[in-house]
Amino acid sequence: MSDYRRCFIPGGCYFFTVVTFDRLPVFRDSMNVDLLREAFRKVKVKRPFEIQAMVVLPDHLHAVWQLPDGDADYPNRWREIKKHVSKRVDTATNHRREKQVWQRRYWEHVIRNSDDWRRHLDYVHYNPVKHGLVECARDWPYSSFLRSVERGMYDLAWGCTEPASIRGWTTGYE
Image (cartoon, rainbow, N blue to C red; front, side, top):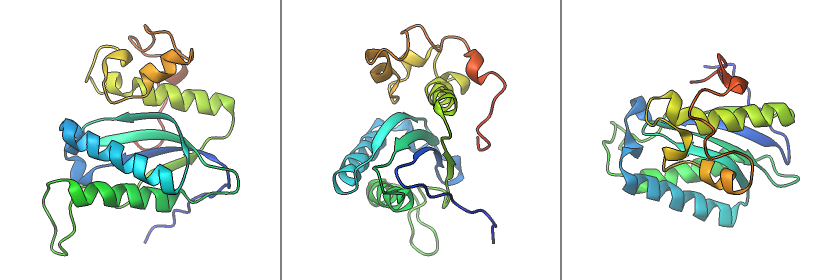
């Protein structure tokens, strides 16, 4: 059993990496991305939180969330999101008749300050380029990058080359 301990900070800001089962490209199918979006919408109605950045790649996703004041319950939000998608995605089941959509665990990191926050946003938005899926961040359809451009956080040409802020940097869980 793992000695890993999650960090719970009410009203905290978190970076997440969530991976599909065996890194299967579940989200190569745009219909499955739509199911994921639907899951986020439903969970946010019941358990509000702000998505500050997000990218969905074929076999994993990254997100930065801000939780409401006094609330540190991101595990139940992820459980509900994963459950919603798992019930609707057409995929294999295991010997327990569980859908094999997600890895059981996920990576979380508490955002410590504004520099840490910006580095994680850059990491999220550059990820499709890093994985060779597109030439520029603006070209990936399943990302909050264009929304961030509209908010004045990025120039549209950002992310066509590796940003200095994340050059040689890893999140600890790729």
